[in-house]
Length: 408
Image (cartoon, rainbow, N blue to C red; front, top):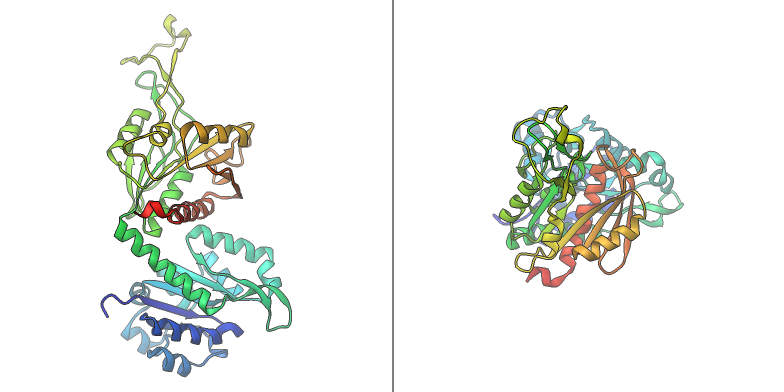
């Protein structure tokens, strides 16, 4: 009983709700503990008695039920689970989650939860492809929700298309894979190192060379990796970003400090160099503020700065098993990024065009091209940086896990 995984299953309203009974059976058969929340609309399709009979536990139904609240309140219920699954997740339910609405027990538990949440959508094809639902889906991805499906198939309404809830075996496989990866990260102690933000290279005590990087993209990637169970350290240049509970953050200022912090935190399995390290630094540093009428200040001499990505990619002793670099370009995005990937010996380059100010540096949006060492390219279209980070973190972990030698 001690090592059994605990699933809190939320049964939403929709014709696919009857499949949740089969999911409960499959979970229990495979050694999971299951508790349920039956929504008001879910009761229109399955009965509390059928859920209780199959799960062995009376379903929780009403946020304001005195008997339920006296036994286990909505906060305790959200803490009990190892994973929360919503099947089916209706268009209305996704909409409520996307805006943080908590007007019943199910939405209150999810909003109060500190656990991962897996959503299995089920709705009419027109509802799934509606722009509002698409935006809700992207928002929930950016919040860290996981999805399984929907899939293409025949609808109960007689139409055909995307929107059908995934088959129970597929949902069960997603649940198993979630715990498999969690256990793997824990057993193998998979460690990730993320650099983010700008660096400052000082000319004198008050002046420095820097750039417009806010550190948001790397910050969100580190958060997403940490939430997935990867032991993550974020090495962060000067920024206004807030600390994240459970995420180790090392604050630095200069490129040298960032490199020193990287060295201290090696070895690592995954390295993601999203920091916009200043390419150049002043040739000399004045301990005293340089007066503006100083004749020697008419020319600023610069030296090439240290290259942290190159240090990691070409490290023969402690090279991380998967090295990801970032390329911020104003022209020839793919060409310049491929060159960087090859020269720095990366496994992947995340390339973004910073020629337009609506994406990239110091804004909340980004658009990136993922360029792999095998020559393949994937695009993540313009979206909020937390959404980009969620997709990117999942892609990096999948790439790492798919390479069997990384797990030896």
